[in-house]
Image (cartoon, rainbow, N blue to C red; front, side, top):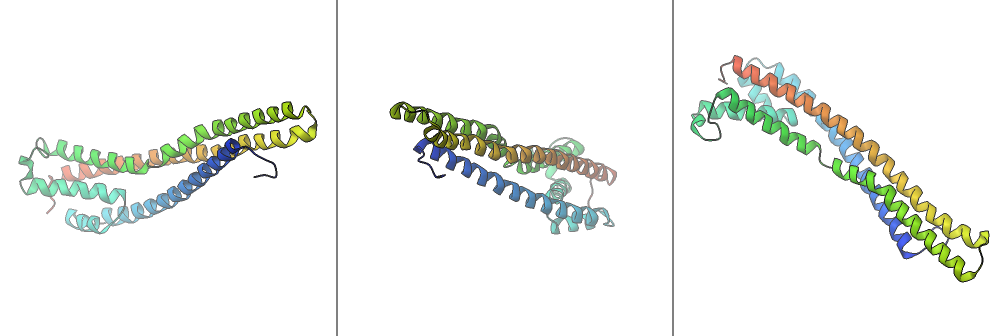
Length: 218
C-alpha cells in the first residue's frame, strides 16, 4: 500500500483507521452544522417569544418556530392547554399544576439533551480505541518483519527498514485519527452542557411565567 509488501492484517488495520477518520470528520462537520442551526433557531425564537405581548402571541410564535427552545416552549403550552381543557383529570396531568408543568418541561429538556449528545459516544470510542488499533497494526507488522529476517538470515537495513517503517505508520495513523476525535468530543461535550444550561434556564423562566399568569394561556 505504501510502496512495500504489507501483510493483510496491517492493511486491514490501516483501512479501519481510515474509516474511523472519515467517520470522525463527518461527525465533526455534521455537529458543527447542527450547532450553528440550533444557535440560529434559538436566537430567533427567543427574540420572538419574549417580545410577544401576551401568552397567546407567545404560543403563536412558538408554533411557527423551530429549535430546542421552541419545542420546550411548545411542550409547556401543550400542558397549559390540556389543563385548561380538563386534562388535569388524566394520570399524565394528575397532581399540582406547577408540578405537572415542571415535570413535562424537564422531560422535554432531557429529550433535547439526548438528541444533542448523539454522536458524541462514537467520537469518544474512536478517540480511545484508534491508538490501540494502530498499535496492534504496528506490533503485527514488526512480527512479520522479524519473521522475514529469520527467513532471510539477514538483519541488514534494507531488509528491516521497509517492513518496520510500514508497521510504524499504523501507530502514526492511529494517533492522527484519535486526536481530532478526542478534541471534538471534549468540545462537543462542553457545548452540550452549555446548551442544556440554556434549556433549563428557559424552562425555569417559562414555569415562572405560567405561574404568574395562573396557568391560563388565554
